[in-house]
Image (cartoon, rainbow, N blue to C red; front, side):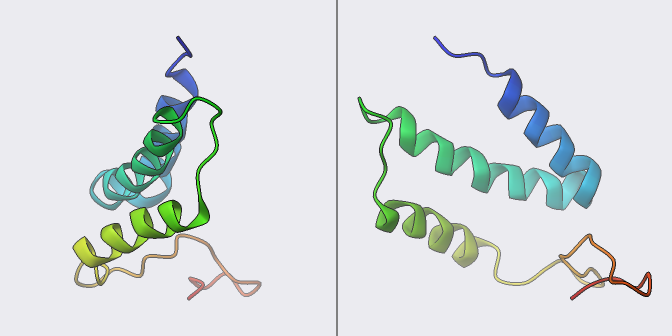
Length: 82
């Protein structure tokens, strides 16, 4: 059975980058995509399956929370990238 440590590390990184609320929501998208791979013997997933997982997540999270830009990165001038 594979270790869950890499997934846990990824989730913690997302929480640090986007905060516990939005980071947790983004981590749920990542884990739902990873779960698709566990359902197959050869660890192959069709593109449409991943798009479906993303679309479901977008339907549940259509816009960022009030007052928050969903991009955590800064542009070359140090302003929040959009």
